Length: 148
Length: 468
Image (cartoon, each protein chain N blue to C red):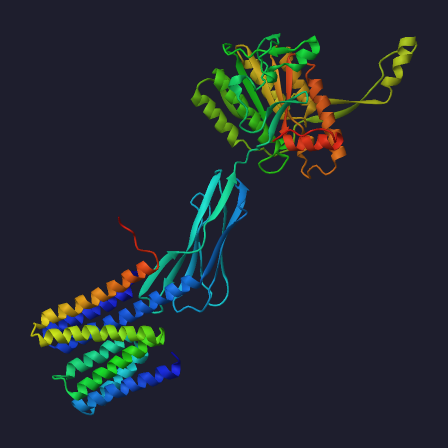
């Protein structure tokens, strides 16, 4: 992904996050979004994205339009950071995994599962997906041991 | 694929926020493990895809140069890799020389656009066939989360031959009595060691046991019996002074003398004869193995022979030039006839008492307590010393067998002038024949069959080379 497209994508993500936070909590939201921007410059990508999510979790009490817009901005930031050193194809794969896991988590909430169960389901889903990709890599490269 | 500490750090962060979500009853904190999981999955997919694309398009070759060497000769293992496109991950190519090779693994990062070369040089101590396993390619993703190592390219085979000649022959009077490496069978008497009694040849006797000297002398074919019941001690004296270092590595004079000595050991072992070994270097006796029998003893002797290397240092043969005064009176007809032969004649008086081979044989023969036969393994460089040594043994009624290398065939600059080489070789043959005149002495020539054939063929074009 070219640096121009990356910068544009990051800007779009930050703007969405800033507008969402501002809608949710006011002007302070803009300041918090700015700190996320600084985080994107100094920290490794997953930590900066996680920091943005932590801000949203700290201020959000319900799923208001502002919160949803902020979450969308975080997702865009994740996708742009993934696409920096990988093709859009695999960046899309990472975003898809995020949406699937999030969907599973939301589904458990709608099923009135306790939060601990939801947390467990989310962690297990992530672990299963990562292990699945690992096995796929072993098989496609011929590194998997054949057991009779 | 392998995961790194950075991966586990991210997993720990995700798990921590999952716990925080439960502890603080804030579901949105579960967004952190969700986002981290998506991030890791995306990186994993990109890593795998790039690894697969790169290995599919990568051309890796591994070679060993040369692929056939002697022991302790240098060999280089080289791997080259040419990528088809600039990869996303970082790659490192590593070659793994065989364990028997005294070389270490070598690595180099894969060049994005140009061919990458990795070398490792070493040598092998032991003969055999070795295979360098396929080079490995180690991939790491740009964020240091994942790594994978897989074998790529081809193996490289190296054949290591023993530093021992395979074309050694033993000749008696120009006739071969033992040809090639490993074909000698001492138990059937084909070693030619003449230690037994003479008897007339009868049909059925192996032709390689005919004693040609006795046959020429007596006019009828005679064979020499090797008496397996005779408990005769054999004293083997092998010369490993600097003069026998002549010749290419692994095919020097000492290597051929060593082969003859090994045949001798095999012969002694087959009859369980006591065998003593003395190795003579430039400074004197360097190895002493007292006479004994038994497989352990013969193995020990073999090990001492394998460990022999030429010593360095000046020779100890001294030559003095003395002008002998004519001592014959010239008044008589007899004196007048002989006088011209004594005029202006220089005589070489050679001091050989301090020469190591003579000294070693003299000391050992003086100490022996029972009958023994002496086997000398040397070359024709110190001819006077060899003659005196043989005479000494003869004076003490000791049968002598000499295995002699022709130094003319092992010149450092090779055999460039075949005519000169033939002349020198013919002189060697004459010296060899002259040695046989000093009593119970049998002289065998040991040397490389191809060089002998080349020298003789140059002078005798019609000579048919023996198969090697």
